[in-house]
Image (cartoon, rainbow, N blue to C red; front, side, top):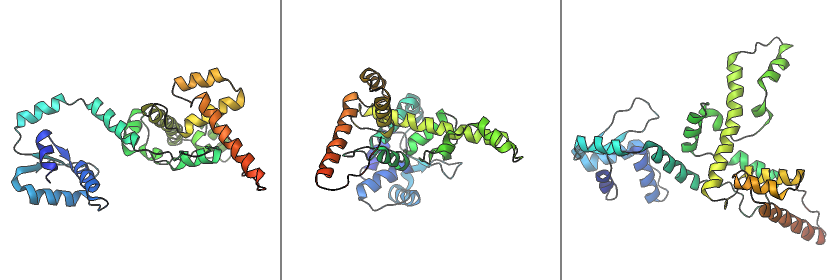
Length: 262
């Protein structure tokens, strides 16, 4: 509470979720929930604070100090740049993401596993689902399969013989699935950007290796790297050299080297 008190004076308000996350971080693993946070605040501050009302169960209550003048609160709220605030929150959330590719060969299996198991932060889910106007639920799944790329026109042809009516809801579903892949691409590009290319993603490695397999063009890979869509040409070579060294070493010991592919 000694830490929260000064912060309530510095800002026009805090959400219970923000306070809960701060307490949980300081508690070192002792997880508490928003309702307990509210009770503790009420007992500690009594009549010094107030809580905002909420119209949704998923919306966190706002707590603010009654010592603040209402005009001061309004003035502070006017000065808040919501776009900058959102960008800062997204940046902080992305910095906590780990695609699990450190010290890995990053072959096709490892890249696929990384793509499917890396969770998108809630801040990114909210931002991208709003930006792209898609169902947030589709972004909760990180799996990539043929269904995600299905063509609405092709689906209509496939179901025509079965007399299955192809309605607008099916079209919307296919649209959301396609856009969810686009959202994950944007997510990885933003992640790669804020880390200045020092941390890799499945997307950037796949693009680099795919171009190398097709034409080995240093210029094209470099161009994609500068556009923040691919790892560097040197990084592609480094990964392949690491894999080659492993295969040679494993084969030299009389073992059957594990098959890899990009």
